[in-house]
Length: 290
Ligand code: NDP
Image (cartoon, rainbow, N blue to C red; front, side, top):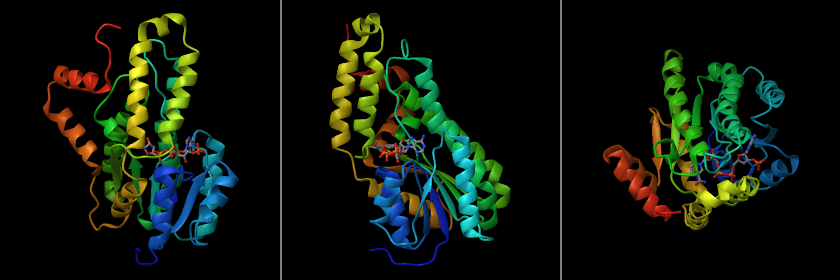
C-alpha cells in the first residue's frame, strides 16, 4: 500500500466509477485531500465507504455552469486560504454512431461533456490552482491520436483535448502550473456498457435509410466494443499515471498508458493514412460491401 503523506488537495471530476473512482481512492491512500466530483449523493456516499474521512464528495456536473461554480466555491471555502494541488479532468461519455445520420444534438452533448465542460471546470478552479502552483491533469485517450469509425464524436473530443492541453500547458508555463494529458488504451470500466446502451438508443432512433446502409458495420463495431471493454486493463493502472503527473518533480506532458495505446499511437504515427484505415477496418470486422 502507498505510504501516507500530506500532498494537499485535489479535485477529480467523474469520480463515481472507473478511472475517476480508482484515482480518488489511490490519491486518498497517498494522503491527498480528495474532492471527488459526483452527480448523485448516493455515489459520493458509496465512494466514501472505500476511502478515508479526508475524501469529500463534491456535486459537480461538468455540463452545468451553476454546478461548476458552486463546486469551486465549496472547495474554496473548505480550503480557506490554501490552494489546490491538482485538478483531474476525468469526467467523460462516449457518443457513437454513423456521422452521416448522427443527430447534431448528440455531437453537441459529446463535446459539451468531454471538451467544453473540462475547460469550464479548469477555468473555475484555476484561481485555486494558482494559489498552490497546482497541476492540471486531463484524461485523454489513445483515441485522441487515432480516430475510428462510428466513434467519430468521441475521438473528436479526445483530439480536441490534446490541442487544448498543449495550449494550456504553454499558457500556464510562466506560473509553473504543469498541465499533462493521460492517454489510456482500453480500460475495463462501466463506460463500455454505458456507451453501447447510449449508442443503441441513438441507433434505434435513426431513419430506416441509416439502418439499411450501416447495420452490418454498426453491429460489427458493437461486437468488437463488447469484447474490448471486457478485456482491458484495470483503472488502477491509470490512477498510477495520474499520481505520477501530480507528484513527479518534472511530470510528463503525455502519459501513454497500456501496451495497446502505445501500439495504436505508434502505428498512427508511422503508417500512411490508407494503410492505417485498412488495419482499423479489418480489426473492427467492417463489411467491404455493406
Ligand atoms: P466511467 O463511465 O466509469 O466514468 C465516467 C465518469 O464521468 C462517471 O463518474 C460519470 O458520472 C462522469 N460523468 C459523465 N457525464 C458527466 C457530467 N456531465 N458531469 C460530471 N461527470 C460526468 O468511465 P471511465 O472511467 O472509463 O472514463 C473516465 C475517463 O477516461 C473518460 O474521460 C474517458 O473518456 C477516459 N478514457 C476511458 C478509457 C476506457 O477504456 N475506459 C480509455 C481512455 C480514456 P455518472 O456516473 O454520474 O454518469
